[in-house]
Amino acid sequence: MNTLVLGMGNTILTDDGVGIEIARQLKERKPELDVVETSEAGIALLDFIVGYDRLIIVDSVKTEEGEPGELYKLEMGAMKPTSHLTSLHGVDIATAFELGRRLGYKMPQQVSIYAVEVKDNTSFGEECTEEVGGKVSLITEQIIGEEKL
Image 1 (cartoon, rainbow, N blue to C red):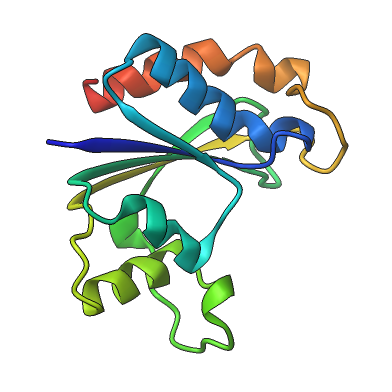
Image 2 (cartoon, helix red, strand yellow):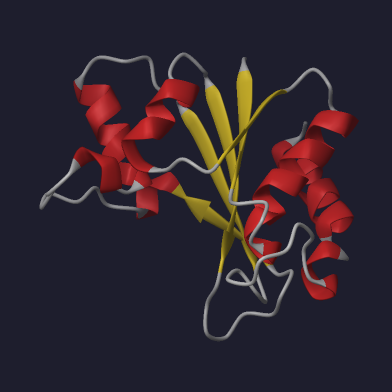
């Protein structure tokens, strides 16, 4: 089964780059994995994911109640595609997947989405905050165990 790890974020906005940092660590520990780092979103993701059997997405999230460095696992099935599009560039991941399926692309059948709670995703900086950066290795190991990589 061919697997893609998609590390998402922006590496110059402190914690927003945590998905990319985790993807890099996954590649170091599991060099056989295909890993893509991107700040793209929406329909542009189809360029990366089409043709893979399995997709693991790692990104950041900022909620009101979460603790920095907390890891959430989301299921694609819980996300509903939107039907009120004004632009194909700004679609959510569920809508992009649905569009890919309807266009007949070979889409991943297994999708895992991991979101890491961040402290700061608006300040310029090339490193994660201490609270988030200090948990990157632990989160990487968690994903390896959860996904049986």
